[in-house]
Length: 488
Ligand code: NAD
Image (cartoon, rainbow, N blue to C red; front, top):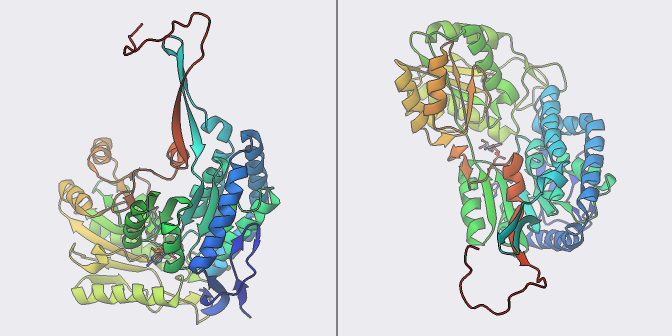
């Protein structure tokens, strides 16, 4: 039996019928688990109307009250994070511990947003001119839209909405249609936390709903995370319609291993960052740049670790789950074939994996290529699957040039015991997140717009600054003076 999944508008499930729907799968079984409504422009308009109406009063509420709602949401989410993690695993496929970690990362942003009374503080300059004071405040934008990808159905929306809501905006979240259920659990939690109806809305959908958000007059900002071509489209269309847009795109993250590195540490990191969440992480490592003569010894250690990985149903105790859909699994498998055809050496072939799960699941085991060259599609394209490509280079300089000439700039890591080399890399590399003996995962084609999601960048994105200059007349007021103010 598949569940009907519909929108959440004005504090309740949408009651109308949908003309278009999409199947949602349990990736570990391959079966359809839900059918999600895809919003038409009319549905998006309804959500925008509810959000605009809610914004008017929510933006007037006191910071103390908003902080209380944020705290209540934090408590509810913390108590029920298992439920959200289970929903993520059921539709995305990632193993439960990973889904749990995703919710925990989102909670951290909620906790940050609880400090909104402090975060929104302005500044005050007394007597900028005689008897004239100047001060700055930050005000919410209005209706803000969040368009999120499938790979973090809870964490990525939570990069944005806690701060957007805390700052006094109303939100329309358009999550990925591939794993839409986590967003609805979060919507129910907001209601339970006391957030007024209409401040947080969820519309499910595809291009039609995204286009409706990008062009709607009441939507003031767009926060997008997804693949680079769509990020570029969203940035160009949204800004052309006068919206403030932050659009985070795809990634191709390099891990550079120098000959003096601790190879056990490097091999652990390559396997964790290459195959965690089946490579469906924006910070996954997909290109391992081995500075010779390190490659043979490093690859042997990586292969030994890959042989111990268990691929299977994320609800069991496995290391790696299935891919999100059958279509995506087939696409990643076609890249593997392209790598073989292009002449790369396939060291571990994950195309027929042994799995701890049902045969119908969207399985693809961890795959390792050696002798990959920069012109091969397994290197040039973002594969977004459990495929790790080793590129052998002769020197540090060659490694750096490779990383810096790649169009993506999301994350990179260097493994070395040489502090000087690490320091040089952190300075020279044109990538926004740099790990030294740790891997994780923009700049360039990974970020459109100049505002990052986190911290004070987020506060600034979701508010407009205003500077007020005031003078209150006192008995010494000197009457009319047409001259330009003097510095006195
Ligand atoms: P995607 O680009 O296919 O979809 C992202 C969102 O855009 C979804 O909500 C989707 O419904 C919508 N969308 C899809 N096609 C559209 C179209 N033609 N027009 C308008 N909207 C459309 O991305 P995905 O496959 O869901 O997610 C994976 C991608 O996200 C990867 O490229 C990954 O690197 C990237 N990502 C980046 C970061 C980061 O921090 N930079 C974080 C997470 C994911």
